[in-house]
Length: 439
Ligand code: ATP
Image (cartoon, helix red, strand yellow):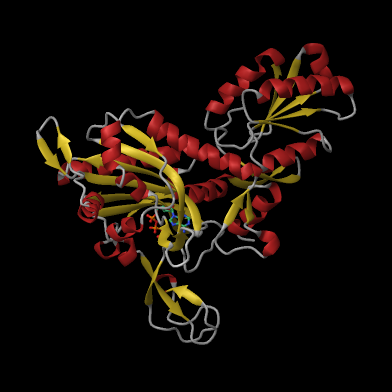
């Protein structure tokens, strides 16, 4: 089984990710996040927000709508240029992205392929109730435009001064020709982005590009990605998107193949210039210091929440052996793990143990995501928690009743230590703040 197959299976088995509308046969390229997946995803998004919005005085967060005026997509260039080259097999009629094929024959039946034609990725939708008068528009193909069309609103309603940024997290939709590799290429997915506005000076703007490359790389390292599994790949001139002056993909090494996780782009003044032209609104910025009016340049960092999620699972997945028994363990950064701690009574049929364990559970779940488990034996419970990445397990045993302490067991080393019950919350809160478990 490949790692992706193992992750797909684990995700469904334990409730990270399910195929969408599965009871009706599923929908290609669309996925649902289960109870654990919803937690992990929220933790990734919170970590992004904390790093970008909370910790930067000059970055503001917004939450724009998924549906926008159709003119937006004309102005942004997506109606004209947001397309991939589509080829169809003349024999089996399967369709493929021409730039993803290794040879000029159908990968499914070796049939002859048609010449590539441009296939627009925007997903159409219709608004309104009167047939014939419905407004045709699109589900956003990227979340970026929701920021740029609000440039003037943000300037007028905040104290933003260049250089400043606007961060956003939200859904985007693309009619991908060949969705696949689990959630890697989905048709509905989430992006987390920064649009950073700077002076329209080439040298200065490229310094900001370098600045954000480094910042974003460090963020991923802090999440627990290993340095050797990350790299930047620069786009060659002929690979650049229609809006870009320069672009770097931050890639993750998945099963020997480098895959894009985030794009860092120099968008020049493309977006603001086009929206000024198409809307007739003046979107220039007045610089108080230099007394100049200009359209700023934009440095963008655009990551895919679902890809970060998938690569975090891949990065954390290990199979090892404990006391001769095989286990699967997700060594997720404790700050990202869906549950921080599991609480067990050693035996499920001893009321004194249950009573104390329930008290501890209630105390903990006011402060962190805590899970209760009294099924099966302790070994099984540990295996289960290891598989879903819970960094700590707390067991209440008979000694606990006498000594007011519990066993805390580490997911990564499987070592155990005894902690006084009145110090447990503080101990765990401190341990969770660390990226790795050190006992
Ligand atoms: P790709 O080359 O893989 O199609 P892209 O270069 O078109 O991606 P961007 O338009 O730069 O991607 O989007 C920014 C980020 O959004 C990507 O780095 C990726 O993490 C995420 N993303 C883009 N398309 C998808 C998709 N179909 N499914 C999941 N995430 C995606």
